Length: 423
Image (cartoon, rainbow, N blue to C red; front, top):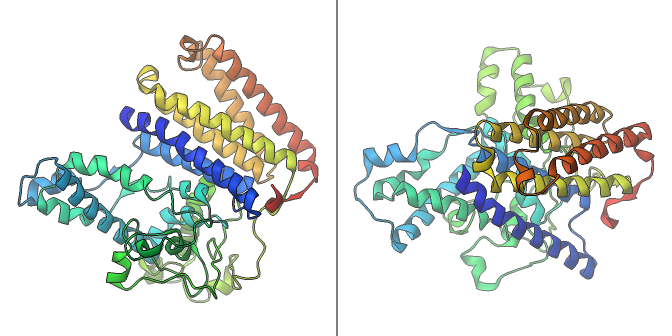
């Protein structure tokens, strides 16, 4: 918990700086691929996902340690060669877990968040799941376990492998020459994120594109077919927590409505998007049928609300950075209380971004929770030891946030609009 938090304190500013550089470069080139509201939603998704991982809010049904102890043929030490083997094994594991997440209905729920942005930029790489509470894919690391790759090597290599998937989420890098034959490139991954019929369910590889070429799922980006991004059942919300459970809720309601037991049980394991016969007519859901002719979500919004959302994301990043850097100081179980406050914060301000009037309810709950914590502990989780009067600053922020939320709701979100592409 503490070690991973320390890593994120270093990694998060690096990602944020690269996102800002991409934004500035897009303005310079006249091709802004990072609308502010979309980027805030993506960064917010990254925050709640990292929080889930740091707090360990997931379980592994069969641990890698156990598999190694049962089937290892060799006793490898943690050498450069072992890390190389472990990295290849993790990439193989990543390809198949990724591919299965696209092909099986109930597994798609944990991956839909990553594809939910209707843009393609570095920020959308941060759209990672909070809904994956159970790790089902450890068995895919059996090749590494057979070779006796130590669990320490896997534990260190997994986050490195994940972080290396950040860079290719961009439209500004076109092709990378001969490396296109070896590595997953931005061009390959644009295909993967596209909803064009020509591109659907292609290019599942994460670092080495060879897996797609080996297993028949490779598709090159075509000049005649510009990629269109998103998911065919669009999220229609900036709230990452809502997005994380939309598909699961549809599966639950479809299973409940099913007219026979077979559909009720098999819907979970059918191909992604499958619904019982006639359900599209009886219980229609929004679906994009013409990828070249649909309105993106949030194309108009209040300029003031956009700036307020940016402010909220920055403050939340500062609060979560303090948490990650001070886990030992905060201690258990208080770190979980702090985590609950961050979850509530993200939920509240992204509800406001969606211009939902119920956001005032969530903000009121957050205000009462936050002020209650300061009164109960006497300060903000030990922050006063590092910054005098920090708890007063946090309290002032909570008061300001509640007032601004009331203002937006009472002004009916201002009716003032602007085009996202200009933001």
